[in-house]
Amino acid sequence: MATVTVEVHGRPYAVGCADGQEARVRDLAAQFNERVQGVADQVGQVGDVRLFLMAALMLADELGEAKRQAAVQNSGRAKAATAAVATPAPASDGVAEALNAVAARIEKIVQTM
Image 1 (spheres, helix red, strand yellow):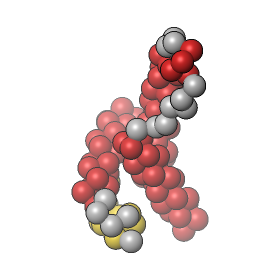
Image 2 (cartoon, one colour; image 1 turned 180 degrees about the horizontal axis):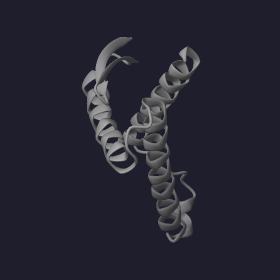
Image 3 (spheres, rainbow, N blue to C red; image 1 turned 30 degrees about the vertical axis):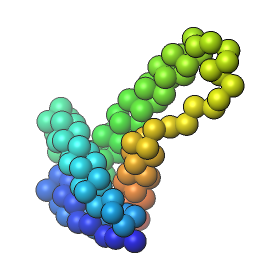
């Protein structure tokens, strides 16, 4: 298992990931940092934990909406196509893994407060 250091909201965080996934984790962290900065611009400085939580909830909402749209599109296909179970794309696995890592980090931060 590899460890990468990413920066979110001006602070470094060590994140564990599968070997070879370091660049992907850095990219996801950069995207998450952009979201956190956007939330901070909208609501001001309310603390990292709250900013992270708001950004994570927004991302989870977007992911849920994308899944709902995909389900609607899949349900409109022919019956023969529905025999095969749709599996998430590898990118969604990475997003889920990143969200889980962020959630774990938030819980750890909250416990130290």
